[in-house]
Length: 304
Image (cartoon, rainbow, N blue to C red; front, top):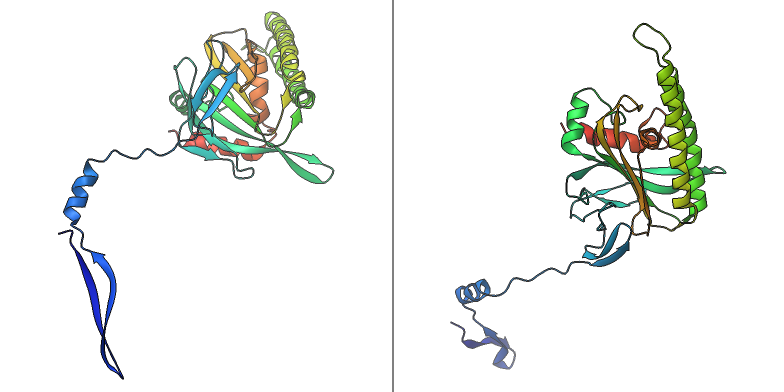
């Protein structure tokens, strides 16, 4: 029952017995407590909220650690509770995100850090994570393709860990991409047929491809040149392959989307040579972050 009872104790001393009355106690019927608890409304845990707005989305309310919605032309990243933590910077990336058209759920393969040597010190500049359509990626890898060459939807998410002005960010991109674009064009131009003959049409296509890639670079310069990139700014690079093609080095047409998450602009490009050059920066033979490439490959190996 729920009645209250005094709790007494008899103490023995030199002057005889004394009775000490302690505080009152309550006997609780636990069956009644359990019954009452079953009809109480469930407590809802407080969830962090964030409003974001810009080219990657109109105002939305989502968990604060990662989120952006999207318009028809741009990319969306939807928050999930699972996360991947880049060990050197402790930057947290969502384990998955859905594309803005809901055609794919992109899986995080891993994350790494980009460091830049200044004098004799390695300075952490940003963390980078790679995402892929898990089904397409696993199929391509099983067929013998690499993360760079495979025909599957892939993306890179870069998060700055220090303030970087747009001009500096663009100059670093330009320095990394231009030599790669030229190498891609040269390899295309010098390709031979099965008999080892030079192919004039392929050489002409290579020249056109290089011009298209360099024109796309101008759009990137306009995008990042005046950007105010601060610590925690995020840049999303999304590469979605299209139909097969014999006119590109990748062997397929496709779409490349690049933008600053939450900013007012994004660019949509069709140069597969530029797309390959961008991903070669992280997945090629001379990656800017060997640790990141190793993390991506380790994550991809777990898909199959």
